[in-house]
Length: 258
Image (tube, rainbow, N blue to C red; front, side, top):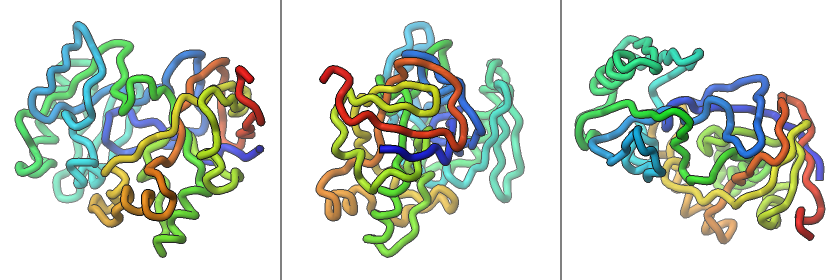
């Protein structure tokens, strides 16, 4: 089965704006470049940068709990984070420094309504750590035909960005990925990856990624129309390389260990 890569996205700060990029250098056993490097703690989360470990996304400022986060437009440039919100102006923060992280947190205190804040906001990170939704969800892949098919059943055009995946694929049949077994190999341009698991969707997908409001009961729609709550795949990089827009996205017919 052959398709093509039609979108590459990174999310430098968990929960905030996706950033399109033309290419990405993927490394074996690594995560997507510059993805989920930072998170914004919504009240004490228990995250310790000296001993970083997986923590549930519910402890951070994410769309599942705070839809208005999508109204903040962001850009990341080698550690420097730009954010702006209509009516509030912007902030430029070097997240490599404590002053920069504190500055972004202070700006967000004004940008996020008090009713959504469970305590002080704090930008957290640790070298080598990623704030993934799943501790082994290294790279995420989305089949755009599945999103389009679901939208037709809902009578609504769905922006695929609401699924917050790293790699968008065009040309695969809708929901073909549901039949993939763990261990199935794919080639994304020169990169070889192995399917880890389907992505179980949460309330973040209920939020329009531009308007920042809940407009679709996505979990209910998936369960009602498709009989599951999956949309997208987590994959692990087996052999690295540079993947680019327009590259082939090819799936092997058999599992790697078959």
